[in-house]
Length: 156
Ligand SMILES: [Zn+2]
Image (cartoon, rainbow, N blue to C red; front, top):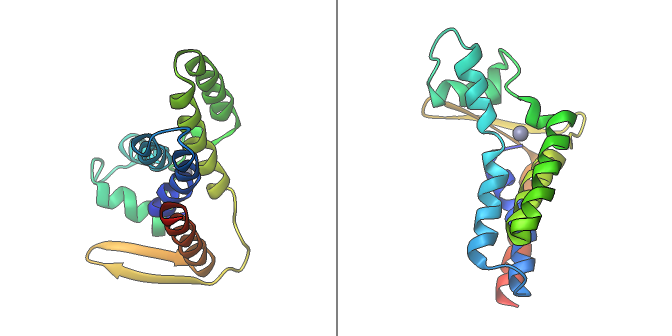
């Protein structure tokens, strides 16, 4: 999934909590950022594995979207990472259940999106400057639905 979908999905969930004053809007926004931040491991794996353009964000992006030269997902994208992070969220909950909650929503929504794949889905590809872009029609539809829900939550 694309980085903006990884922001939108947890942000929309958290916005419902913000609407009911369970968390603040600032925390709802941070929840979206956490959803995006999970993929920071792609950049770390780029630094570890890449022979050329080791520190290039553009190279890390293009590898994730198009070239797939090596697996950019670290342990946090797999079962053992989920187990460790679940443990961390539980400990965090003793100090601040709100921070634990938005961290959990950000992280688990990320995994849910990453592991939701539709076979033979139609994909649109284009190039933006030096960046390869890819968007599936289903993801585009999901983004539109999420934006509609967000507008509905904010203005209702
Ligand atoms: Zn991911």
